[in-house]
Amino acid sequence: MPRIPSRFIPVLLVLAGALFYFPFLGRVHLFDWDEINFAESAREMIVTGNYTRVQINFQPFWEKPPLFFWLQVLAMKAFGINEFAARFPNAIMGIVTLLVLYFVGKKIVDERFGLLWALAYFGSLTPHLYFKSGIIDPTFNLFIFLSVWFIAQAVSAYGTPKATRLAAFSGLFVGLAVLTKGPVGGLLLGLTFLVYWAIQRFRPILRFLNGLLFFGCGLAVASVWFGLELVKNGFWFFEEFFRYQIRLFSTPDAGHQQPFYYHFVVVLLGCFPMSLLAIRGFFADARPDFWGARPDLQSGRFSVADLQSAVPIPESAADYKSATENRSDRNAGPLKSERASGYKSEQAVSFRRWMIILFWVVMILFSIVKTKIVHYSSMAWFPVSYLAATVLYSYLNGALQWNRWLTIGIAIIGGVLALLITALPLVGMNAADLIPYIKDRFAAANLTAPVEWQGWEWMIGTAYGLIILGLLVLRQKRPVGSVVTLFLATPVLLWFVLPAIVPKIERYTQGAVIDFYEAKQGQDVYIEPIGYKSYAHLFYFQKPPPTNSSSYREDWLINGPVDKPAFFVTRNINIDQYRYHPNLEIIREEAGFVFLRRKPAFK
Image (cartoon, helix red, strand yellow):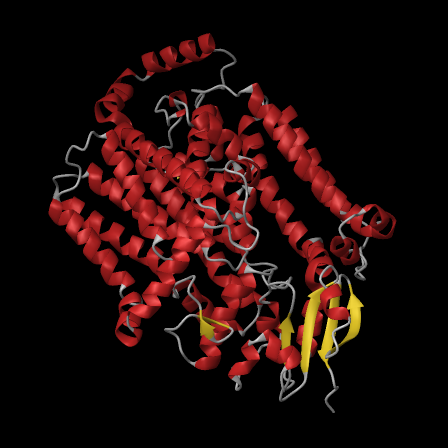
């Protein structure tokens, strides 16, 4: 196999990210709540010209600081107010994340490890998918990871001038994290640092002045917005902001209460396949090992074939011992030098500890939090990908044997995912036959939406299942090819699923209501969802700033002296409380949604 010059690897990562992250960003509407919520905040900044105040429905929005919305505003200025622009910042962050993982991995172990780390993150389900979304977390997570990386480097450089610069960079990125999602950014880094410090028995690991510089940089960055709000609006905004953060931690929000183990299941299934490899990575024998193949450091060239050719994959522990002893005899000089330098082993071991601590901090913290949503634990994806990369690295270098439970796990989860993707089109094509068996009236009505299936979509999931089966069968003969295929199969799967299946699923779940809002754009009317919470009407109706403050009150829109036509949307499971209301009349029902208007009809 032709060797790839090292200088081209970052270029290949950029091209891979561009090929997989940018296509189809605007193929499907934004999803309620979070995607629409955040895009609407950016839209309202543009509409009002107020870029310092985060708003929803042209009222203060206490949940998030503005950095991510500023990025969306820039994209909307370039591409228009649409789905592509709302998701564009995360696609950029996806490419940056791949490069960061590669270069960090290259620094702490070697080039091969960095490439495997980027591959693990790129090729796993939810980490890949979220870079094609319009939610905050991919951007926030990158800032937190960089902050942890630089503080870990500062601790390793304790007592040297280098530690000062590293602490400043850590403060810079934690400040950006706080400016993206709020105090939780500082909390995650702070808890991780405290746990690491406790493990070190509270011996000095960071000089006071370096710590002061860290706090100063973080505070300076966060004050770009928090300080401005304090000056302009006083403490009332901060009181509301922090009151919301406390409520989010202490009470379940909008039905998002889940069992304590929720996030562990989410990470295990959502981060397939890297989550299965990461389980083995928690054990000490899966640390990055210097007993394997190395790139040609003189030429700076590297090929994935080197991973396999330098050390054959042993079939037993005895084979491994024999192979490494022979290699030691042949390369006594180089290996002695590597042992003397530690081959970056001390740095790798130290950073592994940081990653494991970060994983448990995230998982325990968000398991305690009452409101549980999939992406709340997404910061754990970074340490999970790191641990998965350590297993891949050790396995391909011959230092670690493949576990049969790993084969079983990949077969089960990969098989279930393949069956699910296969079943979705079949359910859609046979929806009429299935509706009588669905007890949820809203879900049953969703399936009545007019959606055209081409008839071949089920083949996507089937092909994915066959690929998973094939790579497991050929794993021993072609270990490198099987690993690469495993982590490319999921991005390719999503590349086909997003344009071919997801838009049709979206038509069932929210297509009818989005169509209604878009049809009302530009009309001087009120539109409001009743009986359930939604942000879709704000973005897709492109609601203008209200001129009558009473329009914020549902009772005024239904019973008060409205000054223009008022339309309402509810779900079929909520219609009974409005069906016979004297001021309302039903326009139509479609796909589980009921559309009403205020009587008397306006001419």
